[in-house]
Image 1: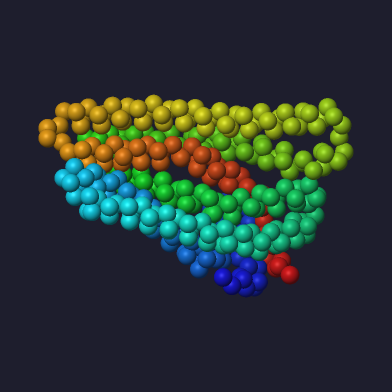
Image 2: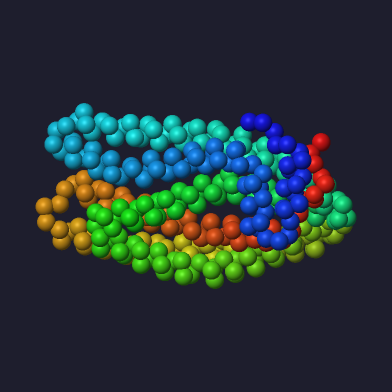
Length: 306
């Protein structure tokens, strides 16, 4: 991969500012289209293979029951393909995103210096800038996987077991209705947490034991509150998942002449659906965190890497 042209980075830096996290993420995407396209193409292929898992597994089970072992072995090729693509994606994304951050950090530092921010705040904001790169490296694959899994699993369930698919869509609607309030409250907590983190280096250098203890206890309290909110959301999703499995088991038990492969496919697609939904609290929390960081991290127009 070739280094990004410094003039392009500088012009991109003009757009990376305090308007919003969405503006910052969009500007990074526009600055590195080739690198991101290559990485996310592998993410998309990995997700398509993952979505095919349960269907091919169901075919394999039915083939084994019929005594057609050679046909069932084709499932192993799908498994191998998934792992090969996954390995390639993991090798590529580390190279891509470490280079992006290396080219992003220097303009952040120089611009913060020009604005005459203190060392503590500059250091904190350089670390916070990494969160945007981490979003592309870690959160977008998670979001892509979750979206493909949720939509794909629900669609497959609607096709092979309509009542279960309809129940999944109802559960998804309830989750979407609750997410905005969850995100707003988490963003407020992240704002307070990041305010504290920006003061940390200065506090370490000048205050005594009592003030430091209060500072770190306050950080701990904010992190615990964020963790508790995620834990409660996770528990509620677990209750909803259990109810969905009750619906699925009831539908399958009442069916006549049902095949083992069909049962496996339904249960696996449902597990895929609920397993992807439980990513929602952590993803929404990360987006709330980025919205606050987007108000803090600014890259200057004229600062380019040396």
